[in-house]
Image 1 (spheres, rainbow, N blue to C red):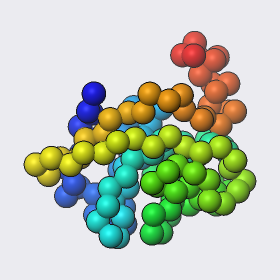
Image 2 (cartoon, rainbow, N blue to C red; image 1 turned 180 degrees about the vertical axis):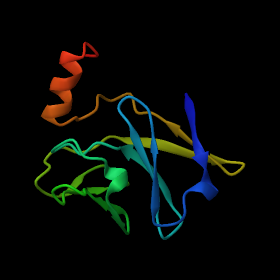
Image 3 (cartoon, helix red, strand yellow; image 1 turned 90 degrees about the horizontal axis):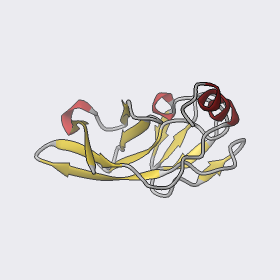
Image 4 (cartoon, rainbow, N blue to C red; image 1 turned 135 degrees about the vertical axis):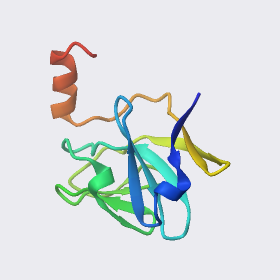
Length: 121
């Protein structure tokens, strides 16, 4: 299922958009014009990757500088060790759509505990 995220024009190159799903997804528009979607939560600690720094095809977490590859979700710099999920992106008629991955998310321990306490697990 494709979820409408935003208009492509709403995300300038080098910027991101946070999609309020559960868990949230970050949509990135690179300087090269590519668009990628990954889980928004750093796998090391609860921080929004949409608030991070985009450089090339990597995003740096604003909290502890872990870096994630936007294409693969792989960790390119610690302290994070687990990858983030990647999601399929479709751009049609100027709209950005995201198809959420079926894989379970790699959430940091603080988020997992909060989900269990909140009964959302």
